[in-house]
Length: 116
Ligand SMILES: [Zn+2]
Image 1 (cartoon, rainbow, N blue to C red):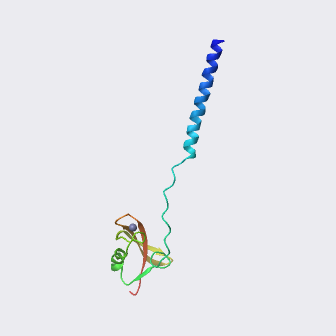
Image 2 (image 1 turned 120 degrees about the horizontal axis):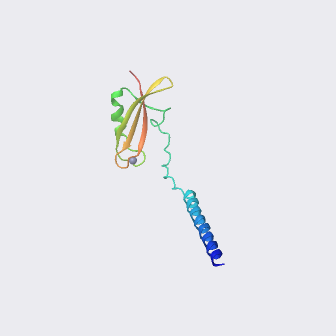
Image 3 (image 1 turned 30 degrees about the vertical axis):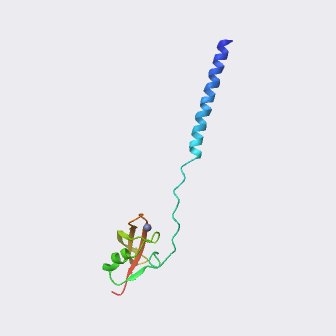
């Protein structure tokens, strides 16, 4: 009788342990880390949308112009991170990626070189 009770106790403990482990696993998978809060969408202003680029007369002024514009999220100053030429609907546009110096907000501007 003692041996049977001992075995039963072992089984009960094993089951309890399995249930506990299972709950820990479920608990972990049920509470994933919340995603980082997305930044609010910015309005589609002139120069910041592909369909409505800034018009400039020379590629030489593109970066200077981009740097002069403040960060749209915090109004701080920005630096140019990247400057590329992209072909959009048979037209070459300058695409400038900027990053604000204070908080690192990234933004993208589009320029059309006209009047050449
Ligand atoms: Zn900023």
